Length: 215
Image 1 (cartoon, rainbow, N blue to C red):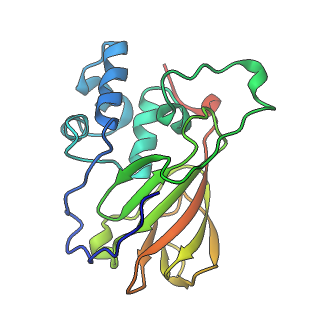
Image 2: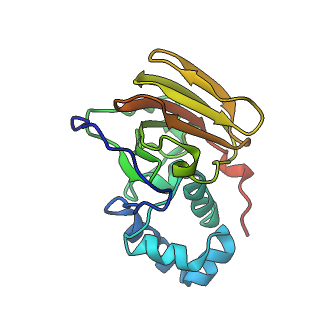
């Protein structure tokens, strides 16, 4: 992964977001295969058609919870949605699967609050979603609405200091080398509480495909 440079504090939760190069094209391709309009995907995912249009045109990215909503709209788990389209999955792969998180690998998604690399994306139907994230927002005003999504997650601070905000508990500071495990259904936000760059490793549990609501 490229060397991380110190990032200046962002001034607003409305800071421009940048999508990864292939996310918009990927969503457009999945829609085209199903012959769905933006309105159809909007109805199935619960995300406004105008937002989806911006994502497809690479002018807006999606937070983790909204990526999950889009994946479910397509009837996919998040790991299936993020995995390369060319991978073939067979029944006997389960006991022999392996994926290396090499330096610089991962699908990068940049929002106002986070710069995240979704690791080991070549594996479909993972039970966990590993992410390496630079925490960018320093206040809740900069972060925006708390995130909520299905599953649980473990977060570990690799560098810097991180303030953990949840809707049911008082904020807590995690120092480098400390972590927290939470139920992701409660609203939560991680803020940079350091003058330097703060980076976290998080592992989010994946919702089994059998539990997804599809037609």
